[in-house]
Image (cartoon, rainbow over all chains, first blue to last red; front, top):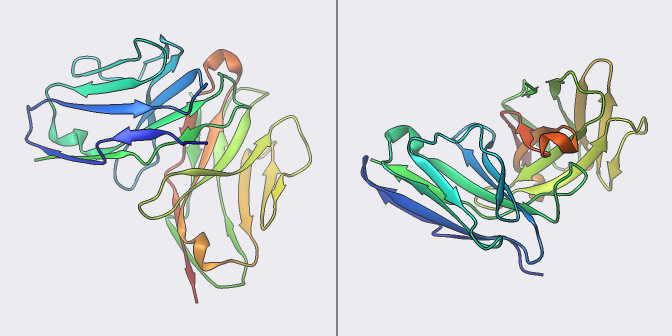
Length: 115
Length: 116
């Protein structure tokens, strides 16, 4: 079974530029999560989708971050414009359904450096 | 809001020995799940072990076991017979009820180094 795929794996941009990350969850997984992991910290949830609807985006900085999952499969996370403090690893995860008993499977992450 | 605290930034252990990682959490919920995740260097995060709060029996997965103390809100991980492949960051995480969307709240992590 293929795991969660993310691209690109690495991205370096200048501050005030825009960037987009892509995630393809495990086939059949209805729930998709985007986490931000700043160096030396644990991941923090940015947004959670159930199919193509948003379940939780309370910690998403909506003035600069946006995310979509239009067809309930792939998802894109965008930052526009980027700030220095956005440097982090962006992790995508998926689970078969909502519910804490359902394991979340993580992708390899995209490491973003903002200069 | 839930919080998860890991007080040990880094631990080292000799191969074949045992190491215990600490985790405390704060919540007002009565039913929830606790997890330990492993993040090896430059590799993706994987689930090590999971504990349901309403189950009194401590979870065990091969060389990994937990000590769950619900009243004390403590959830430690014991790695027995440590192997070089256990070298990684370990994160303790909390997830509440379904109504909360099962968001994972992570601790700050403990770096474990297994020495040959």
